[in-house]
Length: 117
Image 1 (cartoon, rainbow, N blue to C red):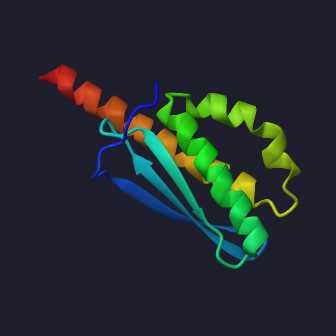
Image 2 (image 1 turned 120 degrees about the horizontal axis):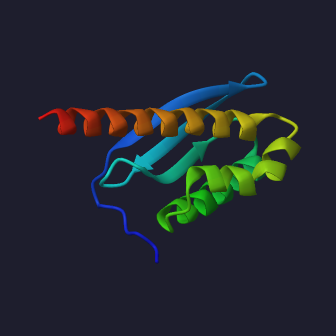
Image 3 (image 1 turned 60 degrees about the vertical axis):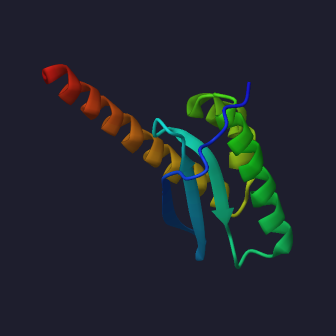
Protein backbone atom coordinates (compact mmCIF):
# COMPACT_ATOMS: atom_id res chain seq x y z
CA UNK A 1 0.00 0.00 0.00
CA UNK A 2 1.39 3.38 -0.97
CA UNK A 3 1.80 5.78 1.95
CA UNK A 4 0.50 9.25 1.02
CA UNK A 5 2.82 12.14 1.79
CA UNK A 6 1.50 15.16 3.69
CA UNK A 7 0.65 18.21 1.55
CA UNK A 8 3.20 20.28 3.46
CA UNK A 9 6.41 18.47 4.34
CA UNK A 10 9.99 19.03 5.29
CA UNK A 11 12.65 18.73 2.64
CA UNK A 12 16.41 18.60 2.41
CA UNK A 13 18.28 19.97 -0.59
CA UNK A 14 21.88 19.06 -1.26
CA UNK A 15 24.40 19.70 -4.02
CA UNK A 16 26.88 17.12 -5.29
CA UNK A 17 29.54 17.35 -7.96
CA UNK A 18 30.48 14.57 -10.34
CA UNK A 19 32.89 15.09 -13.23
CA UNK A 20 32.62 18.89 -13.05
CA UNK A 21 28.82 18.78 -13.11
CA UNK A 22 26.68 20.09 -10.29
CA UNK A 23 23.64 18.04 -9.43
CA UNK A 24 21.03 19.17 -6.93
CA UNK A 25 19.21 16.53 -4.91
CA UNK A 26 15.93 17.19 -3.16
CA UNK A 27 14.59 14.77 -0.59
CA UNK A 28 11.04 15.14 0.72
CA UNK A 29 10.36 13.71 4.15
CA UNK A 30 7.34 11.85 5.46
CA UNK A 31 5.47 12.95 8.59
CA UNK A 32 7.80 10.81 10.72
CA UNK A 33 10.98 12.26 9.10
CA UNK A 34 11.81 9.35 6.82
CA UNK A 35 12.72 9.54 3.16
CA UNK A 36 9.53 9.94 1.13
CA UNK A 37 10.51 11.26 -2.28
CA UNK A 38 13.56 12.10 -4.35
CA UNK A 39 14.17 14.84 -6.89
CA UNK A 40 17.29 15.12 -9.06
CA UNK A 41 18.12 18.30 -10.96
CA UNK A 42 21.01 17.76 -13.35
CA UNK A 43 20.54 20.98 -15.29
CA UNK A 44 23.63 20.90 -17.51
CA UNK A 45 23.63 17.22 -18.39
CA UNK A 46 21.48 17.33 -21.52
CA UNK A 47 17.79 16.62 -21.92
CA UNK A 48 18.15 12.86 -22.37
CA UNK A 49 20.13 12.44 -19.17
CA UNK A 50 17.76 14.78 -17.31
CA UNK A 51 14.84 12.58 -18.36
CA UNK A 52 16.65 9.46 -17.16
CA UNK A 53 17.32 11.09 -13.78
CA UNK A 54 13.73 12.32 -13.45
CA UNK A 55 12.32 8.87 -14.25
CA UNK A 56 14.78 7.21 -11.90
CA UNK A 57 13.89 9.64 -9.09
CA UNK A 58 10.18 8.91 -9.63
CA UNK A 59 10.85 5.17 -9.41
CA UNK A 60 12.80 5.65 -6.17
CA UNK A 61 10.05 7.91 -4.76
CA UNK A 62 7.33 5.34 -5.41
CA UNK A 63 9.47 2.63 -3.79
CA UNK A 64 10.02 4.83 -0.72
CA UNK A 65 6.28 5.49 -0.45
CA UNK A 66 5.65 1.74 -0.69
CA UNK A 67 7.86 1.47 2.44
CA UNK A 68 10.80 -0.17 0.69
CA UNK A 69 13.89 0.51 2.78
CA UNK A 70 16.74 2.61 1.45
CA UNK A 71 19.10 -0.38 1.84
CA UNK A 72 16.83 -2.54 -0.34
CA UNK A 73 16.60 0.21 -2.97
CA UNK A 74 20.39 0.52 -3.04
CA UNK A 75 20.77 -3.23 -3.43
CA UNK A 76 18.25 -3.37 -6.28
CA UNK A 77 19.85 -0.44 -8.13
CA UNK A 78 23.48 -1.51 -7.70
CA UNK A 79 24.07 -2.53 -11.33
CA UNK A 80 22.43 0.65 -12.63
CA UNK A 81 24.48 2.87 -10.32
CA UNK A 82 27.83 1.41 -11.28
CA UNK A 83 27.05 1.30 -15.03
CA UNK A 84 26.74 5.10 -15.14
CA UNK A 85 29.98 6.29 -16.74
CA UNK A 86 29.62 9.86 -15.48
CA UNK A 87 29.50 8.82 -11.82
CA UNK A 88 26.47 11.02 -11.15
CA UNK A 89 24.28 8.15 -9.97
CA UNK A 90 26.92 7.02 -7.48
CA UNK A 91 27.27 10.59 -6.19
CA UNK A 92 23.48 10.87 -5.79
CA UNK A 93 23.23 7.54 -3.95
CA UNK A 94 26.15 8.43 -1.69
CA UNK A 95 24.59 11.77 -0.74
CA UNK A 96 21.10 10.33 -0.14
CA UNK A 97 22.67 7.55 1.95
CA UNK A 98 24.35 10.23 4.09
CA UNK A 99 21.01 12.04 4.49
CA UNK A 100 19.34 8.75 5.48
CA UNK A 101 22.06 8.11 8.06
CA UNK A 102 21.60 11.61 9.51
CA UNK A 103 17.84 11.09 9.76
CA UNK A 104 18.36 7.74 11.52
CA UNK A 105 20.81 9.34 13.95
CA UNK A 106 18.36 12.16 14.74
CA UNK A 107 15.54 9.66 15.29
CA UNK A 108 17.71 7.60 17.63
CA UNK A 109 18.77 10.72 19.56
CA UNK A 110 15.13 11.78 19.96
CA UNK A 111 14.24 8.30 21.20
CA UNK A 112 17.06 8.37 23.75
CA UNK A 113 15.99 11.83 24.97
CA UNK A 114 12.40 10.61 25.24
CA UNK A 115 13.43 7.61 27.34
CA UNK A 116 15.33 9.83 29.80
CA UNK A 117 12.23 11.73 30.88
